[in-house]
Length: 354
Figure 1: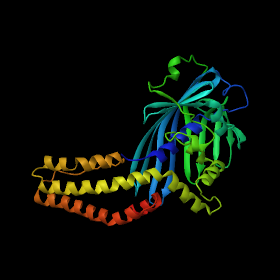
Figure 2 (figure 1 turned 45 degrees about the vertical axis):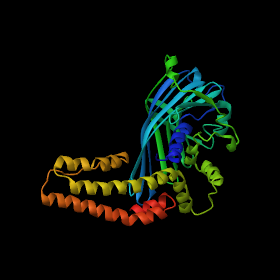
Figure 3 (figure 1 turned 30 degrees about the horizontal axis):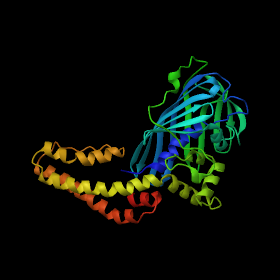
Figure 4 (figure 1 turned 60 degrees about the vertical axis):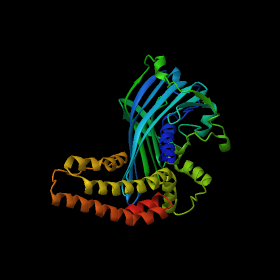
Protein backbone atom coordinates (compact mmCIF):
# COMPACT_ATOMS: atom_id res chain seq x y z
CA UNK A 1 0.00 0.00 0.00
CA UNK A 2 1.32 3.44 -0.87
CA UNK A 3 2.26 5.54 2.13
CA UNK A 4 0.90 9.07 1.96
CA UNK A 5 0.71 10.09 5.62
CA UNK A 6 2.88 13.23 5.63
CA UNK A 7 1.04 14.98 2.80
CA UNK A 8 -2.24 13.75 4.28
CA UNK A 9 -1.25 15.31 7.59
CA UNK A 10 -0.25 18.52 5.87
CA UNK A 11 -3.56 18.88 4.00
CA UNK A 12 -5.87 17.50 6.68
CA UNK A 13 -4.52 19.69 9.44
CA UNK A 14 -4.19 22.64 7.12
CA UNK A 15 -7.99 22.27 6.89
CA UNK A 16 -8.43 21.85 10.63
CA UNK A 17 -6.18 24.68 11.75
CA UNK A 18 -7.43 27.24 9.26
CA UNK A 19 -11.07 26.24 9.68
CA UNK A 20 -11.53 25.29 13.31
CA UNK A 21 -9.03 27.64 14.97
CA UNK A 22 -10.38 27.83 18.49
CA UNK A 23 -10.58 30.65 21.01
CA UNK A 24 -11.21 33.25 18.30
CA UNK A 25 -11.74 35.98 20.87
CA UNK A 26 -11.36 36.42 24.61
CA UNK A 27 -15.13 36.08 25.00
CA UNK A 28 -16.93 33.16 26.59
CA UNK A 29 -18.08 31.77 23.28
CA UNK A 30 -16.24 31.23 20.04
CA UNK A 31 -18.68 33.16 17.84
CA UNK A 32 -20.89 36.22 18.23
CA UNK A 33 -23.77 34.47 16.48
CA UNK A 34 -25.75 31.58 17.96
CA UNK A 35 -25.80 29.14 15.04
CA UNK A 36 -24.94 28.87 11.39
CA UNK A 37 -23.82 26.87 8.40
CA UNK A 38 -21.11 27.92 5.94
CA UNK A 39 -20.07 26.26 2.68
CA UNK A 40 -16.55 26.90 1.40
CA UNK A 41 -14.47 26.39 -1.73
CA UNK A 42 -10.83 25.41 -1.26
CA UNK A 43 -7.94 26.11 -3.63
CA UNK A 44 -4.21 25.83 -3.20
CA UNK A 45 -1.13 25.61 -5.36
CA UNK A 46 2.62 25.45 -5.31
CA UNK A 47 5.54 24.92 -7.63
CA UNK A 48 7.08 22.06 -5.68
CA UNK A 49 10.09 21.98 -7.98
CA UNK A 50 10.89 23.54 -11.37
CA UNK A 51 9.50 20.36 -12.94
CA UNK A 52 6.51 19.55 -10.66
CA UNK A 53 3.45 21.57 -9.64
CA UNK A 54 0.97 20.85 -6.86
CA UNK A 55 -2.69 21.88 -6.68
CA UNK A 56 -5.38 21.49 -4.03
CA UNK A 57 -9.09 21.77 -4.78
CA UNK A 58 -12.11 20.89 -2.73
CA UNK A 59 -14.96 21.97 -0.51
CA UNK A 60 -15.61 22.41 3.20
CA UNK A 61 -18.60 22.85 5.47
CA UNK A 62 -18.86 24.44 8.91
CA UNK A 63 -21.95 23.81 11.04
CA UNK A 64 -22.30 25.17 14.56
CA UNK A 65 -24.73 25.98 17.34
CA UNK A 66 -24.62 27.26 20.92
CA UNK A 67 -22.42 30.14 19.80
CA UNK A 68 -19.77 27.75 18.51
CA UNK A 69 -19.52 25.66 21.66
CA UNK A 70 -20.74 22.80 19.47
CA UNK A 71 -19.50 22.69 15.90
CA UNK A 72 -18.57 20.34 13.11
CA UNK A 73 -16.08 20.97 10.31
CA UNK A 74 -15.99 18.75 7.21
CA UNK A 75 -13.42 18.90 4.41
CA UNK A 76 -13.15 17.03 1.13
CA UNK A 77 -10.32 17.75 -1.26
CA UNK A 78 -8.04 16.39 -3.93
CA UNK A 79 -4.31 17.00 -4.10
CA UNK A 80 -2.77 16.64 -7.54
CA UNK A 81 0.82 16.92 -8.70
CA UNK A 82 1.54 17.37 -12.38
CA UNK A 83 4.63 17.62 -14.51
CA UNK A 84 7.59 15.36 -13.81
CA UNK A 85 5.82 13.70 -10.86
CA UNK A 86 2.21 12.70 -11.46
CA UNK A 87 0.37 11.90 -8.26
CA UNK A 88 -3.21 12.12 -6.97
CA UNK A 89 -4.62 11.83 -3.46
CA UNK A 90 -8.12 12.23 -2.03
CA UNK A 91 -8.57 13.67 1.45
CA UNK A 92 -11.51 13.66 3.80
CA UNK A 93 -11.53 15.05 7.32
CA UNK A 94 -14.11 15.73 9.99
CA UNK A 95 -13.66 17.43 13.35
CA UNK A 96 -16.40 17.77 15.96
CA UNK A 97 -16.12 20.19 18.89
CA UNK A 98 -18.49 19.52 21.79
CA UNK A 99 -17.99 22.09 24.53
CA UNK A 100 -14.69 21.07 26.19
CA UNK A 101 -13.72 18.17 23.93
CA UNK A 102 -12.65 17.65 20.34
CA UNK A 103 -13.40 14.49 18.34
CA UNK A 104 -11.44 13.86 15.15
CA UNK A 105 -12.62 11.19 12.70
CA UNK A 106 -9.84 8.82 11.65
CA UNK A 107 -11.31 7.42 8.43
CA UNK A 108 -8.25 5.34 7.62
CA UNK A 109 -8.54 3.29 10.83
CA UNK A 110 -12.32 3.78 11.26
CA UNK A 111 -12.17 5.27 14.73
CA UNK A 112 -12.94 8.47 16.59
CA UNK A 113 -10.07 10.17 18.41
CA UNK A 114 -11.05 12.28 21.40
CA UNK A 115 -9.07 15.04 23.06
CA UNK A 116 -9.70 18.03 25.28
CA UNK A 117 -10.61 21.32 23.65
CA UNK A 118 -8.92 23.38 26.34
CA UNK A 119 -5.55 21.85 25.44
CA UNK A 120 -6.09 22.27 21.70
CA UNK A 121 -6.49 26.02 22.22
CA UNK A 122 -2.92 26.15 23.39
CA UNK A 123 -1.94 25.54 19.77
CA UNK A 124 -4.08 28.44 18.51
CA UNK A 125 -4.15 31.02 21.27
CA UNK A 126 -6.05 33.59 19.29
CA UNK A 127 -7.58 33.60 15.82
CA UNK A 128 -6.19 37.10 15.29
CA UNK A 129 -2.78 36.73 16.90
CA UNK A 130 -0.14 38.49 14.83
CA UNK A 131 -2.74 40.10 12.54
CA UNK A 132 -3.73 43.73 12.15
CA UNK A 133 -7.12 45.07 11.08
CA UNK A 134 -7.22 46.15 7.44
CA UNK A 135 -10.69 47.26 6.41
CA UNK A 136 -13.75 45.28 5.36
CA UNK A 137 -14.78 42.98 2.52
CA UNK A 138 -17.99 41.41 1.23
CA UNK A 139 -17.85 37.60 1.29
CA UNK A 140 -20.88 35.37 0.60
CA UNK A 141 -23.15 38.38 1.07
CA UNK A 142 -21.77 39.37 4.48
CA UNK A 143 -19.56 42.31 5.39
CA UNK A 144 -16.59 40.86 7.27
CA UNK A 145 -13.58 42.47 8.89
CA UNK A 146 -10.21 41.86 7.22
CA UNK A 147 -7.19 40.98 9.35
CA UNK A 148 -3.74 40.68 7.75
CA UNK A 149 -0.15 39.74 8.42
CA UNK A 150 2.81 39.49 6.08
CA UNK A 151 1.65 36.13 4.69
CA UNK A 152 -1.86 35.56 6.01
CA UNK A 153 -5.25 37.19 5.59
CA UNK A 154 -8.56 36.43 7.29
CA UNK A 155 -12.01 37.93 6.93
CA UNK A 156 -14.24 37.39 9.96
CA UNK A 157 -17.97 37.90 10.39
CA UNK A 158 -18.90 37.85 14.09
CA UNK A 159 -15.94 35.59 14.75
CA UNK A 160 -16.67 33.20 11.87
CA UNK A 161 -13.91 32.99 9.28
CA UNK A 162 -15.47 33.52 5.86
CA UNK A 163 -12.22 33.83 3.97
CA UNK A 164 -8.69 32.60 4.66
CA UNK A 165 -5.62 33.19 2.53
CA UNK A 166 -2.15 32.00 3.46
CA UNK A 167 1.16 31.84 1.62
CA UNK A 168 4.48 30.57 2.87
CA UNK A 169 7.56 29.81 0.85
CA UNK A 170 5.55 29.70 -2.36
CA UNK A 171 2.79 27.38 -1.07
CA UNK A 172 -0.57 29.19 -1.25
CA UNK A 173 -3.94 28.22 0.22
CA UNK A 174 -7.31 29.95 -0.14
CA UNK A 175 -10.56 28.99 1.55
CA UNK A 176 -13.53 31.23 0.83
CA UNK A 177 -17.21 30.96 1.76
CA UNK A 178 -19.53 30.59 -1.21
CA UNK A 179 -22.70 30.69 0.92
CA UNK A 180 -23.57 31.18 4.58
CA UNK A 181 -26.67 31.26 6.80
CA UNK A 182 -26.73 32.34 10.42
CA UNK A 183 -29.16 32.09 13.34
CA UNK A 184 -30.63 28.93 11.85
CA UNK A 185 -32.58 26.13 13.50
CA UNK A 186 -29.67 23.74 14.13
CA UNK A 187 -30.64 20.10 14.59
CA UNK A 188 -28.80 17.29 16.35
CA UNK A 189 -28.01 15.80 12.94
CA UNK A 190 -25.73 18.76 12.31
CA UNK A 191 -23.19 17.15 14.63
CA UNK A 192 -23.62 13.55 13.57
CA UNK A 193 -20.46 11.42 13.55
CA UNK A 194 -19.73 8.07 11.88
CA UNK A 195 -20.50 5.00 13.96
CA UNK A 196 -16.86 4.29 14.78
CA UNK A 197 -15.43 3.23 18.16
CA UNK A 198 -14.26 6.11 20.33
CA UNK A 199 -10.63 6.22 21.44
CA UNK A 200 -9.66 8.56 24.27
CA UNK A 201 -5.93 8.88 23.60
CA UNK A 202 -5.05 12.30 24.99
CA UNK A 203 -4.89 13.58 21.42
CA UNK A 204 -3.61 17.03 22.24
CA UNK A 205 -1.23 16.55 25.16
CA UNK A 206 1.56 19.08 25.34
CA UNK A 207 4.43 16.59 25.24
CA UNK A 208 4.88 15.39 21.63
CA UNK A 209 6.26 12.08 22.89
CA UNK A 210 2.89 11.24 24.45
CA UNK A 211 0.97 11.70 21.19
CA UNK A 212 -0.54 8.60 19.63
CA UNK A 213 1.25 7.49 16.46
CA UNK A 214 -2.05 7.66 14.55
CA UNK A 215 -2.63 11.31 15.40
CA UNK A 216 -2.44 13.58 12.40
CA UNK A 217 0.16 16.27 12.97
CA UNK A 218 -0.89 19.91 12.76
CA UNK A 219 1.28 20.76 9.75
CA UNK A 220 -1.09 23.49 8.61
CA UNK A 221 0.75 25.86 10.94
CA UNK A 222 3.51 25.84 8.36
CA UNK A 223 1.39 28.28 6.36
CA UNK A 224 2.50 31.19 8.53
CA UNK A 225 6.14 32.06 8.94
CA UNK A 226 6.33 32.15 12.73
CA UNK A 227 4.80 28.71 13.02
CA UNK A 228 7.04 27.34 10.28
CA UNK A 229 10.04 28.59 12.23
CA UNK A 230 8.92 26.56 15.24
CA UNK A 231 8.27 23.48 13.08
CA UNK A 232 11.55 24.01 11.28
CA UNK A 233 13.43 24.06 14.57
CA UNK A 234 11.80 20.80 15.62
CA UNK A 235 12.71 19.23 12.29
CA UNK A 236 16.28 20.59 12.54
CA UNK A 237 15.71 22.90 9.58
CA UNK A 238 17.67 26.14 9.65
CA UNK A 239 15.49 29.16 8.90
CA UNK A 240 18.65 31.27 8.94
CA UNK A 241 19.72 29.76 5.64
CA UNK A 242 18.95 31.51 2.41
CA UNK A 243 15.25 31.44 1.61
CA UNK A 244 15.57 29.09 -1.36
CA UNK A 245 17.41 26.53 0.79
CA UNK A 246 14.78 26.77 3.51
CA UNK A 247 12.02 26.41 0.93
CA UNK A 248 13.63 23.31 -0.55
CA UNK A 249 13.80 21.71 2.89
CA UNK A 250 10.17 22.67 3.49
CA UNK A 251 9.06 21.19 0.15
CA UNK A 252 10.98 17.97 0.79
CA UNK A 253 9.37 17.74 4.22
CA UNK A 254 5.76 18.15 3.14
CA UNK A 255 6.38 16.03 0.03
CA UNK A 256 8.02 13.17 1.91
CA UNK A 257 5.17 10.69 1.59
CA UNK A 258 4.50 11.54 -2.06
CA UNK A 259 8.18 10.82 -2.61
CA UNK A 260 7.96 7.49 -0.77
CA UNK A 261 4.80 6.53 -2.62
CA UNK A 262 6.39 7.29 -5.97
CA UNK A 263 9.51 5.31 -5.09
CA UNK A 264 7.24 2.28 -4.77
CA UNK A 265 4.94 3.17 -7.64
CA UNK A 266 7.46 3.86 -10.42
CA UNK A 267 9.17 0.42 -10.44
CA UNK A 268 5.71 -1.19 -10.42
CA UNK A 269 4.67 0.97 -13.34
CA UNK A 270 7.78 -0.06 -15.30
CA UNK A 271 7.00 -3.74 -14.65
CA UNK A 272 3.42 -3.30 -15.88
CA UNK A 273 4.66 -1.44 -18.96
CA UNK A 274 6.94 -4.38 -19.82
CA UNK A 275 4.02 -6.78 -19.35
CA UNK A 276 1.96 -4.57 -21.65
CA UNK A 277 4.63 -4.84 -24.34
CA UNK A 278 4.56 -8.66 -24.22
CA UNK A 279 0.77 -8.74 -24.19
CA UNK A 280 0.55 -6.35 -27.16
CA UNK A 281 3.07 -8.38 -29.14
CA UNK A 282 0.98 -11.54 -28.64
CA UNK A 283 -2.43 -9.91 -29.22
CA UNK A 284 -4.36 -11.25 -32.20
CA UNK A 285 -7.04 -8.57 -32.52
CA UNK A 286 -7.81 -5.00 -31.47
CA UNK A 287 -10.10 -6.05 -28.61
CA UNK A 288 -7.41 -8.22 -27.05
CA UNK A 289 -4.83 -5.48 -27.63
CA UNK A 290 -6.94 -2.93 -25.82
CA UNK A 291 -7.19 -5.25 -22.82
CA UNK A 292 -3.39 -5.31 -22.75
CA UNK A 293 -3.40 -1.67 -21.71
CA UNK A 294 -5.98 -1.97 -18.91
CA UNK A 295 -3.52 -2.41 -16.03
CA UNK A 296 -1.23 0.35 -17.28
CA UNK A 297 -4.16 2.72 -17.87
CA UNK A 298 -5.55 2.00 -14.38
CA UNK A 299 -2.21 2.71 -12.74
CA UNK A 300 -1.83 5.99 -14.61
CA UNK A 301 -5.43 6.94 -13.81
CA UNK A 302 -4.71 6.41 -10.10
CA UNK A 303 -2.17 9.20 -10.45
CA UNK A 304 -4.58 11.54 -12.22
CA UNK A 305 -3.44 10.79 -15.79
CA UNK A 306 -5.95 9.61 -18.38
CA UNK A 307 -4.19 7.49 -20.98
CA UNK A 308 -5.69 7.25 -24.46
CA UNK A 309 -4.46 4.81 -27.10
CA UNK A 310 -5.76 4.41 -30.63
CA UNK A 311 -6.47 0.73 -31.34
CA UNK A 312 -8.39 1.33 -34.56
CA UNK A 313 -5.39 0.76 -36.84
CA UNK A 314 -5.02 -2.99 -36.42
CA UNK A 315 -2.68 -3.45 -39.36
CA UNK A 316 0.85 -4.77 -39.23
CA UNK A 317 2.13 -1.21 -39.54
CA UNK A 318 -0.20 -0.01 -36.81
CA UNK A 319 0.83 -2.80 -34.42
CA UNK A 320 4.49 -2.08 -35.03
CA UNK A 321 3.97 1.65 -34.45
CA UNK A 322 2.40 1.09 -31.02
CA UNK A 323 5.00 -1.52 -30.14
CA UNK A 324 7.78 0.93 -31.02
CA UNK A 325 6.16 3.57 -28.82
CA UNK A 326 5.97 1.16 -25.89
CA UNK A 327 9.59 0.19 -26.41
CA UNK A 328 10.66 3.84 -26.46
CA UNK A 329 8.77 4.45 -23.21
CA UNK A 330 10.43 1.45 -21.55
CA UNK A 331 13.91 2.55 -22.63
CA UNK A 332 13.28 6.08 -21.39
CA UNK A 333 11.81 4.79 -18.13
CA UNK A 334 14.66 2.34 -17.50
CA UNK A 335 17.26 5.04 -18.08
CA UNK A 336 15.69 7.04 -15.24
CA UNK A 337 15.52 4.20 -12.71
CA UNK A 338 19.12 4.45 -11.41
CA UNK A 339 18.46 8.11 -10.66
CA UNK A 340 15.11 7.22 -9.05
CA UNK A 341 16.81 4.62 -6.87
CA UNK A 342 19.40 7.17 -5.72
CA UNK A 343 16.85 9.93 -5.06
CA UNK A 344 16.67 11.02 -1.42
CA UNK A 345 13.68 13.36 -1.58
CA UNK A 346 10.96 14.76 -3.83
CA UNK A 347 13.32 17.39 -5.26
CA UNK A 348 15.76 14.69 -6.41
CA UNK A 349 12.95 12.54 -7.78
CA UNK A 350 11.39 15.37 -9.73
CA UNK A 351 14.74 16.08 -11.36
CA UNK A 352 15.05 12.38 -12.30
CA UNK A 353 11.66 12.33 -13.98
CA UNK A 354 11.82 15.62 -15.88
